Amino acid sequence: MTRTLQLALASYRPRKAVPGQGVLDPSVTVMRVHPLDLDLYMHVNNGVYLQMMDVARANYIADLDGYRRMGDRRWYPVVAASTVKYKRSLRLWDRFTITTRLLGWDPRVVYLEQVFTKDGERYATAWVAARFLGPGGTRVPAPDVVALMGDGAPERSPELPAEVAAWARSVDVAHRAKLPR
Image (cartoon, rainbow, N blue to C red):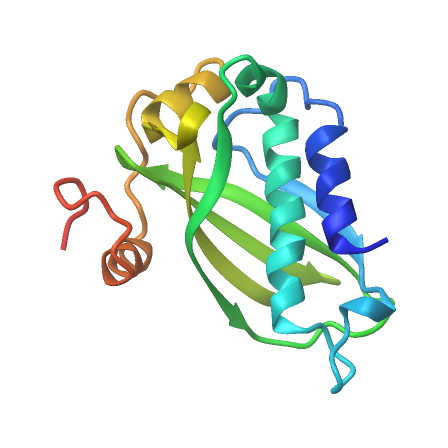
């Protein structure tokens, strides 16, 4: 199954919501490396990591019952920026996990961390800045999405780690008035 098909299934036939899951709780996706994930060097191609991250973010939304919650409003996520730090190579048939967690948000963007691990070791770490759009491509304020996604979601964002805040400024996705220098 290609990762695009896997993303379509995760989005249009999402897994069941996790009872009691909060927006700040981690979401875990388990995957296995398939032959079409590999590049000529016989390890996962860097572009495939991004596709795998898409699937894991779809599962994060599903864990929160987000597709049902956003459905009537016709809201959907888009990536504004992402960066990945690779530490080790995933190889054919490796079974691994992607842990997705919300780090925080500002008026425009939600910030997520996605960590690839295998056998308890970190293989890659990614940061993703995502926006949500509505009908006609209208921007949906990130705090509105967070409030919709989580019963009992905090009204204020946790403070972003300094390195994530610096990254958000450097790629020009951060709300300029909210992030400290």
